[in-house]
Length: 247
Length: 247
DNA sequence: CACACTATTCGTGCGACGTACGAATAGCAT
DNA sequence: ATGCTATTCGTACGTCGCACGAATAGTGTG
Image (tube, rainbow over all chains, first blue to last red; front, side):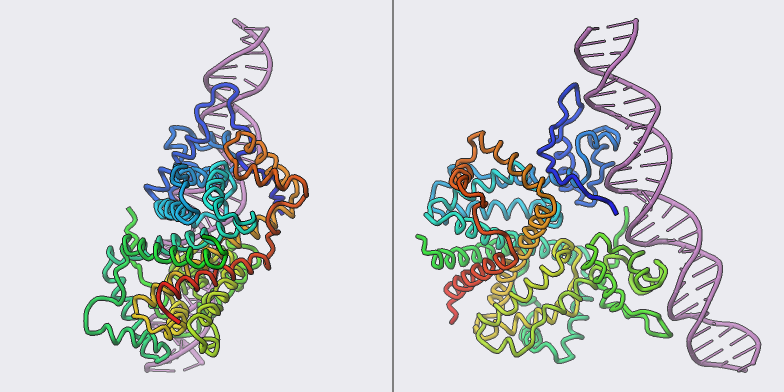
């Protein structure tokens, strides 16, 4: 049984600086980020990161304990992007929260791997800054602190879930565009299922759309998804405002 | 360059049944599910699945093209659990949607790996059934079809995001309980950061809670998270009902 | 019942992964 | 110039998914 100790966060361990280290953790995180964005999360291997830096694989282990640490650094680097100019938080809690929400969604969608690897996330310095900004955004509500936490958490739930699904939708749409046979096969398979009679709702929709050649609903473009996100966000904020008696 | 073709779903490929196959895809999915639930998603390897079934590793590849297919089967098996008795959908769209939402959250939290491996999800038979149920739930709204899609999607966003974060919270809480030194180190590190003066909100909260020894906010128990989820859900449904002019 | 056909099972091997270990190299104080 | 040790890196191990082809066993035909 592997003991699996040492749960310390990477940020609590001092970064090598005594003599002349060739690299910093920030450089490692940047290289890993470039790789993830350009070639996908699977391309982020210790060997590839090291190659990107012109170093040998094992050199990285002088700066980090494990690949999990690297991912933690990547996650925190991402969170730096979600930070918002403080001026944007001057309005009411609602506008300020919406600004943060939109920015968060944008960043999560720009780095699709970040949500999938969220299990190994840790609470780093930028996470702390982001949390601070979220608290600042809702400070005008006058709510007690636990209620502020809850408000932030609920909005973040919606934002994360939307980003998760939006990334999925876009990936699917791209795959369908790349391989038209795929969507044809999926439709054929779906129609077969419809004929079992177990899907009255879907059957009705399919029958109604049989005349025209467009699928029901608008196409899953980035803009469509963004405006849908916006409507959901506003509805959520409406409901929260009413239920929490703010504004 | 690997051509990466054959995007067909596993369900469109016939399952071996000609002579006397020892297994079915369902058995493989079940074994994989057991492994994931009991030992974590990382324990789900082709070798372990095969061992669980008393077969050799490569035998699985007669039933499945790749491990991705296995994960797809697992995801779809999970979706079977989120199906709800049809009687539960007889009420108004709001209650029906809430029933599905609660059940979905419960299942996602019972299988924490499912959200992390969502990238490789495919649209299987149970996904179709789940979608059909969601459509049935909102059929009473009288909304046009695209608006129904949007309504479902927005609720699902919130549910998924909440499950994602709830799993994360519970994992963190469990880790903290297992290793008290960890939380001490985190607090010490956090306090150090506070002294930079860059965190007025967090500093104020920390100062206010310095008297008692409880952290601000309730403990992150399953029940606390569930009731927070419920409040967010009701707020969201409130807002959606108002914005979409239903009920 | 023997035999051929082929569906089904499985053993071997390959390249890639994370990383433990210890040797090699190079910066700095003396 | 020398010694100490911070820093770099090469080698090796175990594990992963899975390509390939050999071995096994069920079934229809004579």
